[in-house]
Image: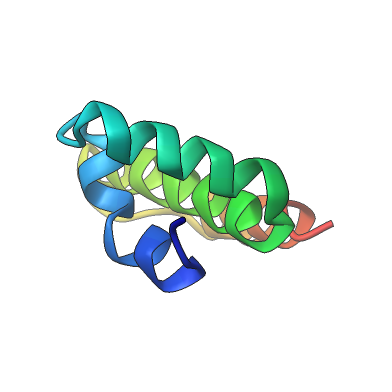
Length: 77
């Protein structure tokens, strides 16, 4: 069974679709029982998506930064 550390160490591989079948099954099983890792994966996906959007911008506005902070804080609930 995967540990929380395993989930963190392999999060990028999983999100990018580079994990094998048994790794994906193990991760999903772990996420079923671990609320903290579900939160971590949700925040990690959000960070990747936001980073991609910010790369398209020259300089993020204060409003965009505030929205990002609000989303990250609200995802911890």
